[in-house]
Length: 349
Image (cartoon, rainbow, N blue to C red; front, top):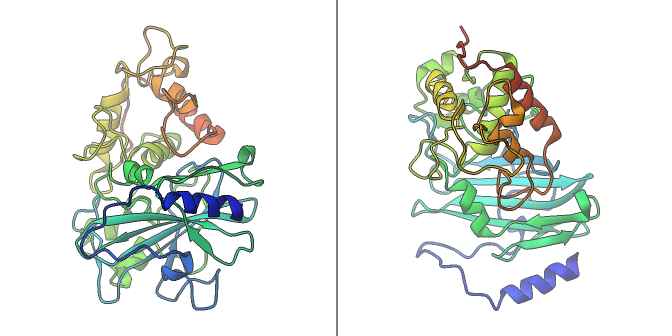
């Protein structure tokens, strides 16, 4: 793997340079230089780097993931808009991907002094003691024996922006809803918070999240739903689809809302149901009947949303990036929810 990566890095030197802003320092060549780990360690984060675990996971072909954030000393996240946190310049986040106990890749995003975000990914060496900056074009089909089908795709930086910059804020998985202490017991693929990981309450107590509406401190955010199954299904769609399918100006141009709101969960649930139940889907798979809808209550076999989650054809699969395999647990959850749906859905008391 090291020889393949070296060759790709050499080839990348001939590619056009990524435009840099005037206050942009060069991306570090090694993960150890980003400030994630304590000096001399490749496993122990620095004291000011905080671990966290979102309650709704993004499916990534079964990869195990760990996540960290560092907020600059003396700064804080502005949470006055609870669904679109504003992160101070200098904020750093890391997400580590592993297969079979082997670390493969760590993704890195950082907010610069000019307010823009930059993205990078680092590929771990065979010794497991550091990771090297991948080419901006990514590394397709990297040989990783422990990964599904023995390969692993390191995303291009353009792929990172396609997902991260389609939401109200580029930071995904670190939000009032995702860090709520009221965690969803039915959420698929959840990694329980590790010792020392922070949640919403801890961030507020430390002064790292400020101006969060008092209602969300007094009552922990949660997905509004008519049942426990619906809560988990909506949370799953929020994590896997809501970064593109949302009501922000940066979302994709499809009238479909799958992002859930911490501030107004009833309204976001209603918008999800209004935009999906019985609504004809423009992009469908060939095996669907003519009367298919985005979601056909009690009829998963006529539901475009479920069919596209099941598809791994380039023209129809959803999400369109980041996976080669379907998610059996997530699919089973969404199908179970659709089977329980009626055309008129009562809201949770």
